[in-house]
Each structure stands twice: as structure tokens, then as C-alpha cells.
Length: 263
Image (cartoon, rainbow, N blue to C red):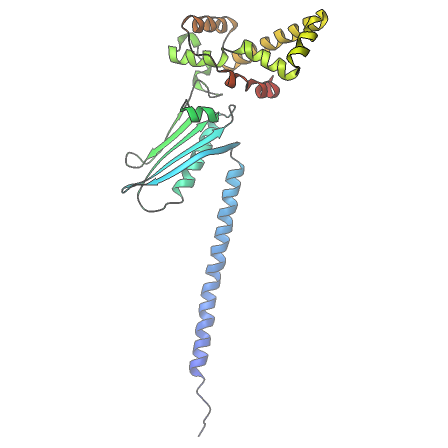
């Protein structure tokens, strides 16, 4: 009689483990490959986005919905299609990371200036989606300040007062901005400037350059807002007469970086 232990249970267990491994390994490999592809795809998508940064974002869960607010900082020169791509990207990013099965409610705002965000002023683009109301988002643009906005080709005299006042605000301080640019290009103390300007040749050279800078600024703003020379002058006269708000000193000083890049 053969007293050798029966090896069938061990063989069966080994066979089961081998079968389990054959099933599990492709699944694990597929999972990591999918994760790698997703990460690569997300990285590729983010690399194609226009230059921007996140000012702030918030999330709140209510008994019936997920509420998101995202605030972005974008370039003043961003175009409509680029802005749309950016807004949709952040919409999908939030939608693809659900915390639960509740309805989705999101607002995404794009600002060209962090101060505008802090003051609650006009954004350049906004996306809103409330799944309680509809399945597709609404995107709205500031057509007066967007580089390729639909009102860029319109006649400013046909715009309503708030629209013209907004353009006036942007162009109003060009005279002061020219002096700011000159001070940046020719840094001098008050005493040094007095001494420098006492020399007639220096004074004429400085004043000529300052006048040229003002003219360049006028041309810049005329192009930016699609204004003729006559429309530009009429807008300044109207704004002065109606006492419209002028650009602040702090806001005006930002022209230095614009002047260096564009003018």
C-alpha cells in the first residue's frame, strides 16, 4: 500500500493561483497603462492651455449639489478661442473629479488683473453651469475689452454710456502715463531732474521724447479700442464733461510693463 501523501490539493491550489495570476496581471498592467495615458493626456492638455494662473478656488457641498467657484488670472491679450478652451478645461477638470453623485453647479471667472478680482470688477470671461437648469454651460465675454471682442469693430459713439465710460477709464490717464514711462526710462532724483532740465538742450530733448511717448500711447489706445483720432478726442471731452472715473495712479503705473512689451 502506497503511504505517500495525496498531492492533489497542493496541485489544485497551485493551478488556481497560476490561473488567478494570469487573470490579474493583464488587469493590473492595463490599469497602470490607463493611469499613465490619462496623466500624459492631462499633462498634454495643460501644456496647450494659454498662460494663466489660479487666483483662488472654492468648493462647497450642499444637501443637493456640489458648488464650485474658480477664479483665473489671464493675459490681457488672450483671444476668445483661447479663453473658451481655458474655461472648458477647468469645467471638465471639476466635473471629472466628482465627490458624489449630486448635481453640479460651477462658476469660473477669468480676470486680466488681480485687483479687478479683489474689487469685484468686470471679468474678461465667465463660464456658468447649473445642472439643475441645463446640461450645457453658458459662456459670457466682456466684448468691450476682449482682444477680438465683437464690439471692437463698432463705433464707440453708438455704445451706451457705461460702455463708453469703461473705455474712457482705460484711456483717461495717458498724459500721466507718459510721464511715468519717462521716469522709468530716465530715473533721476528731484534735484538731479531740476539740474538736468536747466540745460536747454537736455530739456528740449526730454520734452520731445515725452511728447513722442504720449503720441505712442494715444496710438496704442486708439488701436486697442478701435478709435479714430476724432473719436478719441471726443471721448476724452465727454468723459471730462460728465466727470467719469479716471484710472487710478496705481493702475496707471502698470503701463510701464505694457510699454516695454508693446510700444
